[in-house]
Length: 255
Image (cartoon, rainbow, N blue to C red; front, side, top):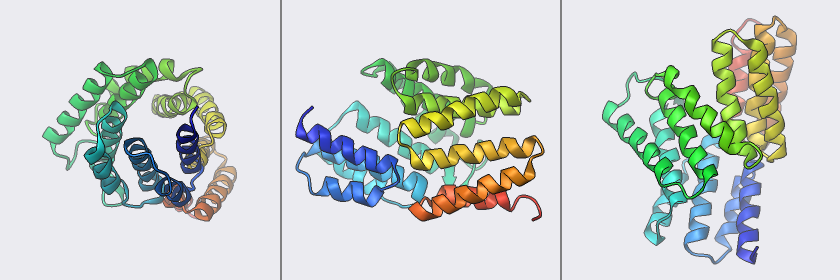
């Protein structure tokens, strides 16, 4: 691994830990041209996702001016998915209010990324987003699980972040289907993988899901206690979206 490889990986690890400004500062002090620009776009997108910043568009534009790669195309797909999914700060799953042509175009781009993926893990990430698009933009939840299963197979033993993401969403389908035991098994494993991969904000979002299951099982006190701790930890690192999720969860029922 070269010195540049080490720096780029360190920046990614900082971002996964919720240290987005520090990661970007490290990259801004590093000469590396296109590769640094792509990594900066990745960090910015993670910051937008969890901290509610608006950094990714400019970073993606900079990287695009410098070159082209599958990784950059995938980051652009993720960013466009995020923009379609959110109306301002409001998460709006399903097709209502969304441009059907834009959603279909995004779906086709995800399929093209799968076709041209450079390796099985990349192909698994493309399948993951095909599932997310079906679930959260098309409102076709029946189409999503096969994509998640393919992503899970690609991530197992190779990419804990991909495995975690697939388990997270498969568990959501288990819960919707009334199988709380299966949902718990998947979500508990996804929580473990979040820690293994150093995904601090991701760990917090997983704990919110465990609080959801605790409430489902009638343990309201335990659910609220876990959500309060998630809110406290998220606020401490500036992860505003997990914080908002936890606060909303606590406010779902009377105190």
